[in-house]
Length: 364
Image (tube, rainbow, N blue to C red; front, side, top):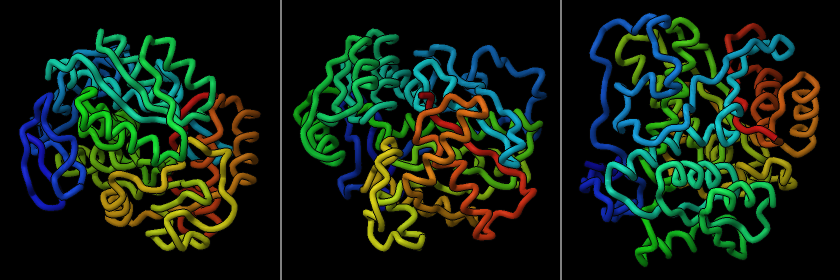
């Protein structure tokens, strides 16, 4: 069963069921598995060879489509006074594999024979790859000017690539129109609840890798916010179960010019959903002006006492160069999170010495 957090409406979770509520809000699973033990398992007893599916008992989806994704390294980053979670070492090169494995596993459970997704890059590549693994047809809607390397990654899977003229919103609209015409099951990283079930495992891995303790804060790049919202839900699940003692403060990093979460939270220079100042096109992976779950993202940040900030291209470039010189082979959008860490420390939102985990979300 699926439920709308906004109005409380419930819908059957079927292959031909709705992908959003009649009120326009996103849907979520009505129930979720909870730990069946008061104590977390010993880390040594976890089947880490299964990747994120080591935590299958905490997921509302069975592991039907997998490429061994998850259990990404958590490494010290002394130059940043933080630890980095290396989400760019996934099979397709980004954290989106967390959601793709659970979403395509759910598609198989429902008997879906074709999925569609709209994405400017990493999510499209992940969904197309896992659809290929599942033997399911896929149609990926992308901007006409999408990066050639991202489009090639999608095309190599055999998925249909549908190029759409216009901005990112136009791509989503074209995909949604196709879904409404019956073109396929909407395997959306922004709307599909199964995707967020996958990104919850980010939090569970972080806690397990730290001996079932939570950091003081986590900093993540935010576009549609699939990783931030998943992290919030995962940490909250563990906290409610008593496996960790608190939910860490969550901090979002957005691109100047397209920073709706930062704008909602009152970041300087982001008076509107578009954000103030020059558009940061270097961080193109998070340029989402109207996130599908904006209210849930803002609520998650506020509930943890976190914040969000918009960063310009110059700050992103400086941090990207610094990361690569330190051996982290990430794409430009990844640099937003460590750049935001610097900004939050300058503002006094995070003190020096605070126990911080930063997500590096995609490889170059």
